[in-house]
Image (cartoon, rainbow over all chains, first blue to last red):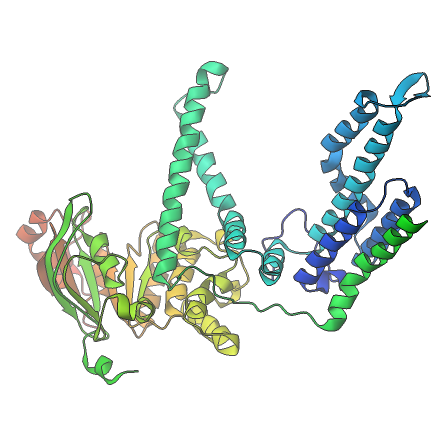
Length: 253
Length: 258
């Protein structure tokens, strides 16, 4: 894949992790998250080990820690929820710095925080080492329903076109002296949104016409065959397998 | 290829009539024939039924009276994939035509849908992009190209299917004069039958030795472009107007060139 279409989540590079076929990375990330989620929350050390595993992956992918941490900020709303839990949960209480907190709530908060953070970090690593386009190919390869993959790929292709249409409508509104001030003007904005929907819908019809004209009959032709060798699979799956070992230790110890 | 197609005309339309489900009748018996290798302009005012006619050529619209044959094949359910391959339609808005994430995948879409793959698919893509001079934009996403470039890629997406006839809907719309000229050069260099739907009369004169005038659902005139454009009464009758100061009689462009 050449230049262009670099999403801002993607970090261009030529590391061994970047070079892995997309579907192996998708499968590895998914398996890793499943393993993390099924780890007992009391095994705190296990989560530390998971973080170390991700650190090793980031090191191999040459993704700097700052880059990952900055993108972890997306998690903030969930963190806020987790922070609330010790205050609102029922059950035995414990006093910390003069605050009465629920023991169950504390464990719950820790559970959400640790598993959430690890999951988001794994996704960030996936997104920063795999181009959007490749992700779609990977999903296709993993036999996700083709309709879903097609919808996702049209979203990428037409996101900009529709944003541009929206911008033109805004300019047209403002050129005629319209400014959205207060509730009174919401009606106009709602009508613009409706018009945008109709326009996008009609564009969809025209695109479909163009597709049918070129022989589309319900399924996307396979243009790029992505394949992975056994070595690539085992390289990608090293992460979830290592995590599984940690998880099993967490259950037995 | 089958032996009929070499003898038959590229497109033959006879007695074609069509009404939309809402009762609006768009075509009232259209007849014409386009020989292999011809470049023909389809002129006509807005609402004359040009788009309806074009959508009949590759069987998107069917069910009216009359027949359409493409290279000897009747347009109908039985030959639909083959018809779609042979009739390449370039739509007016390249953003509708280019729906894949990269130029390469978009050009590959048609032939891949027809079952071409691997090295041959790659060769088709390269050849089609070379024909429109867009070879180095292969891995770019279509929306990062200029409008003129997108129009050229749209032509390539159709050329990659190696069509019998290239149908262009308003090919010169929204193009600046340089892109317009570049597209004309490309169209002239191609060795396919071309049917060009347009309002741009000078462009029709420049590229197409022959023109059809479609008006109120029938072919109102069929003849040499230069002669049709010079007939003031005919032009006025069908709401066709030449740009200010343009006199087709004064143009010495060699419209006879194949």
